[in-house]
Image (cartoon, rainbow, N blue to C red; front, side, top):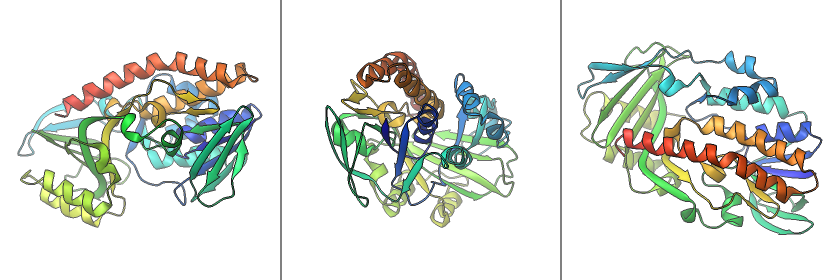
Length: 347
C-alpha cells in the first residue's frame, strides 16, 4: 500500500520502518524544517526493548545511555532531604531524545521518503483512498494515512474533531531548557517541590550543562500554543517568589537556545481510526510525560499497528480494530499512571 505518516519524531519513523519492511511505500511528512533537536531525555520500559531489538538498533541506543545514578530530593532551601532511585525518571534505559530521533531517521532515510517543512491541511477519503492536501507540496492520494503528529495532531483535528474534544489537561505545565551546571550535578538529578511548583534538574552527557524543568500548576493546556515570549512571561509569573536558585534559572531560560514548553495532558478518544485514517502514539492516546511511558507506548504502538496490517493486508478496518483492541488496555494503564504522576507533582 501507499501510506502517508504525519510526524517524524518517534512513532512515525518507527512505523515507517516496519511498514517498509513489509513491502509498503511510505512517505513521512514533518512540519519542522529538519529533525527536531529539542525535548527531554526519553526512557524505555518493558516491551519497548523488544521493539528496539526487532529494529536492530538496541545496541546503538544503549550506546547513548545517560547513565543517571538517581535523583536527590531537596527541601525548600535546596538541602538534600532524600533520594529517588534512577529508574523513577530514567526507566530501564534513558537516552537524549535527539539521539533516538537521529537513530530512527538514519535507520529509515534510505528506504522511506521524508518531506520536511510541510504539513497536511486537508483530508478527504472514500472507499478507494485518501486525498491529502499539503501546505507546500501538491495534493496526493494514499491508501492509508497515519497521524503520528503529537498531542496537537493536525490529522486528528482534521478527521476526528477539535483539540478540545480530545485533550484532557492534568493541571501541570512547564518550561524546559539547558543551563550552566550550577549545582555540579554528575549523572544525577535534583528535585525540589513546593506547593504548586516543581524544579527538576539533571546533568548527564555534558558535565558543564544541566537540563532544567520548571513546572507549575495550571488550568489549561492551551499555554502550549502561545509564543515563546508569552510562555516565558507566564513561567516567570508562576515561579515568582520560589527562592533558592530559581531566579538565576529564570535568567538562564531567556538565554536558552533550546527552550521547550509543554503541559501534562492526555488524549482520550472513543476510537483511534476513521475510515482509512488511523492515529498512533501521542496523537491518539497520549498518557502524559508524568506517565514515563510515552516513548515506549509510541514504539509498541508502531509495531502493533504494522503487525495487524500485515495480518489483514486486504482489510485495513479489521487491522485497525485489532490494533486498538490489543493496545487500549495497555494505554489505559499508562494513562492512569500519568494521572497519578501529575498528582504527585502537586497538580
